[in-house]
Image (cartoon, rainbow, N blue to C red; front, side, top):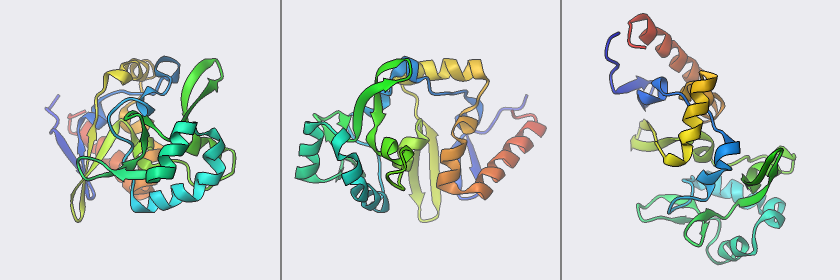
Length: 204
C-alpha cells in the first residue's frame, strides 16, 4: 500500500489524513459526555451562532444550573478566549453553561446539552454549535478561502476509538451529518469520491 499524504484537499478544505484512516464512534455509556465539561475553554462559536443561541435562551433556561444562569447574566452566552476565539461561556473555568445532567436510557448522570434537548423537543430551530457536532474534528481558518480540519486526539475519547473499531466506522463516516451541515452535500460527496480514488490508487 502506498503511503498516504498527511494532508488531503477536498474543495477549499484541507483535512488531516487521520480523518480518513482512523475509526471512531462516540460511546456515551463510557464517557457520559465528558467532552462538554473538560477543558479550559468553551466550544468555538460564530457570531451567527451566538445570535441563534441567544434566541434559544428562554427555551433552555430552566435546564441550566443557577451557576450557569449567573455566568450568562454577567457575561452573556459567549466570550473571547486567550487565543482570541469566540467560545461558549463556561462555569468555574470548566463546564459549558449549556450542560446539564440527566439519565439517558440506561446511562445515569450523563452530561447533556440543553440546546440540543430543546431542539429535539421541537422548541427551537437551532441544535448546537457546529464545532460541538464536529468534535473530535477541530476546524481552523487558514485564510480567506481555506479551512483546515484536524483530528483532536483526547484520552476522554479512547472508548470511542474502541467502539469505532468494533463498528468498523471511520471518523469521516461517523461525522457524516455534521460535515454535511458545515460544508454541504456536494462537498461531502466530493470527499467520498476522494476516498474512492485514494483506495483505487492504493493509499487506503
